[in-house]
Image 1 (cartoon, rainbow over the protein chains, first blue to last red):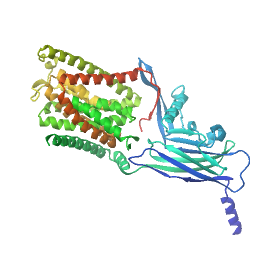
Image 2 (image 1 turned 60 degrees about the vertical axis):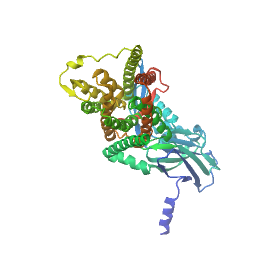
Image 3 (image 1 turned 180 degrees about the vertical axis):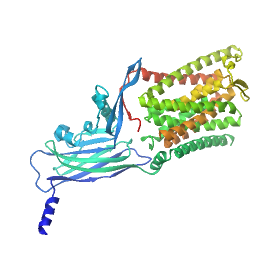
Image 4 (image 1 turned 90 degrees about the horizontal axis):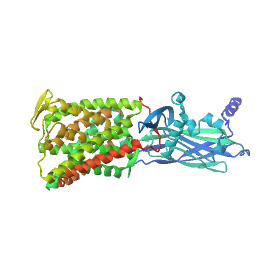
Length: 252
Length: 304
């Protein structure tokens, strides 16, 4: 009996020397009528059974990723004097939102091999299988996708914004813009030493429309005809109501 | 006050939308046009996805036209028979237009199509209206009576029908064709089409000016209503919250505009409208001719 218990304890004991214990300011983002973006605060501690290793300093990377979806990136060129879309690349999967926060400059926190293995950086999060068969220079399209999404705050890389104290406590805040898509937002924490990932923790943040937003959205997808008729009815009622009101105003 | 639009999935300022609706409403009340040709590009500028802008604008035009039609019905200035013929053409055109729209969307050329349509139609109509109203002003100044309408090739076509309210006895082919064209434009450009239908009715069909606006509004309501339903059931792009904000501003603005419009002379109104149409046309033409700052654009993959 004792042997079995010992074996159980051995198996259950952590395989990694350092592990993440995480807290979130909220694990749910509600998109209501007055939704104007959100800020998520993540705070956590590093649990360890042994003293802090004295080798390379510990670093933390936090990523939040929205639902993956295929997108088309188009390029304009001049044809007959006007600017028109001439070629396009279908990117098989790109996150609708992707934010990275690190505790130090990018090159100090992760090496390329581990970035590739854990798909951490923004270009790694975008999968573009078969892009080479569509155009000669798909990389310029991927770069454009990242540039456009960084400009509208859908993608962000914030180096040095994770506040790490005594290699034990860390905290960071991640801004989410107003134009969020619904879904589960995968939230990952990586602990690294010398550019190598030593521990990984994953949870998710639920982004959902609520109240009137939820009701209208569901109606428009599940009963589009009823939704369309309701839209028309509101339009007609408003048009009629306004003219009636103004006639009263003028006569009265 | 920021407000989140459930279908467009963007957050915009509610007062900005009310203001836009109001401003365009004033203009539409003044000139007796739906205002869609101004509102749809403005919605693009404030970041509403084009597909949502076009579909929602169709819904809003129903609202702004409805109060107009009621007023015209009371004054008996709607040619219901002519309106019905135009409407049959319009429904055929709307179905065709949605087909063309979806085909070009799959090619990634729908933005170009919409903008080219705007430039060509606004350019032609704007210039025609400008020249015509300049001439009209010059003629009223010199005291000559306006020329009587003449018989042209349109009166030689078969399938003649009597339109009592308009006092016309003409073939049904020209109004049907006008209706189809307007229906196509309604589906592609997210406009009511009043700015093309009104001149066509006056200059092509020779309808009396007093029934033109009421009859075109009558046709527009049904065509845009049909377009709204098509977009709502196939593309899910009608945003009710956006529509309500626009139409609250719009219907109030339209009533104010009607009062202002009644104080101006018809020729002056038409010249103002022509200048506005040409300005929108010029802005869109420049966008096509000048190299854009960002050559790339990101869109959803079609066929999902």
